[in-house]
Amino acid sequence: MIQKGTLNIHTPDPFFFEFPRQMGKYSEGTLLLVGNLLPSNGSTTNFFAWRSEDHGETWDAAGEWQHGGPSRSGIWEPFLYMDKKGRLVAAFSDERQNRMHSQMLANVVSEDGGDTWGDIVKAVASSRVRDRQGMATVAKMGNGEYIMSYEFCEHPDCPVHTKTSKDGVSWNANDTGIRIDTADASDPFQPYTLLNPKNQPSPENSRSVFINKSYGKGEWVWAPAPWTVPNGTRYCKANYSPDLLPLSNGVVRYTAPAGQGNGSFCWERTGKAPIGALPYTANFTAYGQAGWIDFGGKWNVSGDEYGFEPVGRTNAISVTGSTGWTDYKIIGDIIITGSSGSVGLNVRMSASGTGLNKLKGYAVAVDSATGKLTTYRHANNKTVMHSGAHPEGI
Image (cartoon, rainbow, N blue to C red; front, side, top):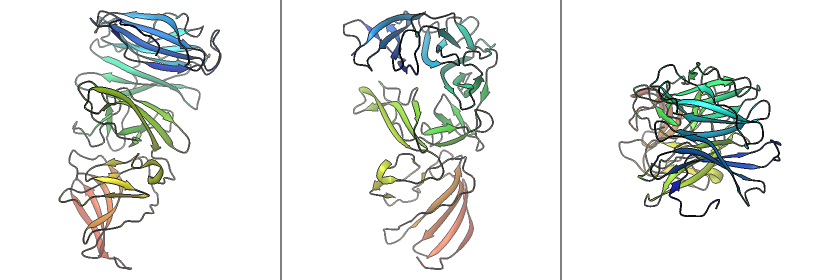
């Protein structure tokens, strides 16, 4: 526990940063925790920092480093990173200039590891007063440039935008960035929420990770998130401001707030799984159903098998992989455990509609009743492309 007491203050927007090198007088490995101190009456918003130099065993208050007003004139969502010169940078959402910008993204730089901070510099500031940019995250890419992602709220939605910087601090504030989209017209809104082209919630909603392999330029693809965050509750904004950590072999760790039990509490939960990396192997023994999206039916894992209970008119469909895959080979065993049924593999699935059976793509299925192997095309309706007896029987 960092602080004990009975102060009527709560601290949203926490962010941890571990120094990757010596910064000021603080050695590599120093931890800096920042949060937003809000009194119960909501009269102010104040960024405060705590520092640990012994891997989190003990903490010292580093003090307040930004002061804001109440809601609509406050400061929110701090994000810390290191720029090209090795300096500590904080990006955050800023409403304090609300006569010119309802909300903008700003950054400040520290030359001494967070003891003092420089002047506020605009990072993204739309010329339209009503526009609101927020929830910034920054990453250094393999080409040495920095990429910022953020929500760009303009009535009625909040699509995700990105922009790049050569040094991590010069962002050209007048450039509002590029809205990301995918080849199957799935656009992320309010980061980590997915809507289909008709602006109706998709089954992938809150269960997708977006990927780009060209340093933020060109097309993005999406893959199922490592795990599905439960729905929010009265006390918990589930999946709000989640975190991603790439691991080895295409595995990604996904951490997000989620409701628990009767909904009176909000917990931070985490899970990891391979997402969309080829060659792909579904290791159900190791990861369970992590990295898969279920569109219907009751699915479960037993050992190294992934199965579902018998269904009626609604198909039981589960999807994994990535919309970025092109030509690939699938090897899998399918088993019908009942006296009759149809089961198979879906390929190149994309842009699912709002109904559980409304998928676009192709399927190859076997039917135990007819003994036939059938290829289908899905485009909200099912079209038989070829059907015939399996040469080796069913």
